[in-house]
Length: 262
Image 1 (cartoon, one colour):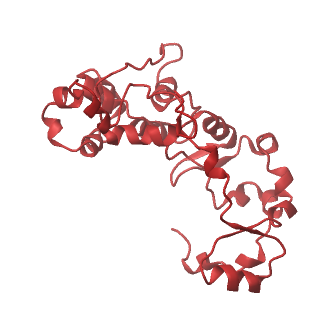
Image 2 (cartoon, helix red, strand yellow):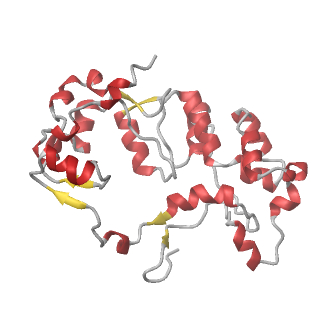
Image 3 (tube, rainbow, N blue to C red):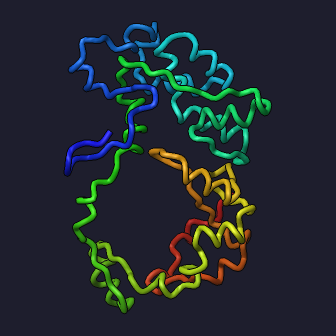
């Protein structure tokens, strides 16, 4: 559904019909969480979620059949994401959502008919709704029309320190990246052709091949998505190390004072 001109746009509706807590003020229906969560309702939604995070995937699936409230909690994407990463160690192909991805990878081929979300019309929870809305809100183009950060080229190190570093003012260097070989070589097509089967860190404990990661990021809509952040990428692909260089403004590597991780 799209909102009016100049307002925030929402891309779609929550797949399970979940609504923010404030919407209950405009409805005569009771919150299903108050009706069918039992004694767990004494806990904050975040605490219920934490308790469920201790369950196995099989237990989580069974719990979803107990009541509508537990169905909603048991289908939270963060819970299933952790099960996917734990079970596959990054060797997975994302298939639309995390529960579907888990079932596709752990069940025998052909035995999974697919997951169709149930729409629960009277479930209100800010905790469960917030991650989805954060990923679903489209950026208003009006937000991008104002340039409030300086864009500079030919800036000397001394000018950078005096005008930007010391006073803590942000600046964008427009003449650094265009000089890198990486500016031409690091396109999705070329990266996939050269390094598609190479594995890179997407978390502290999980590695994914570049082709699986690119597939994931083209489909996933998450508040806090996985992302490639591998400080040792040049060891995996040595030639990439020669395709960029450190700008003189950051020649001093302050991270060296932290020491090496064990």
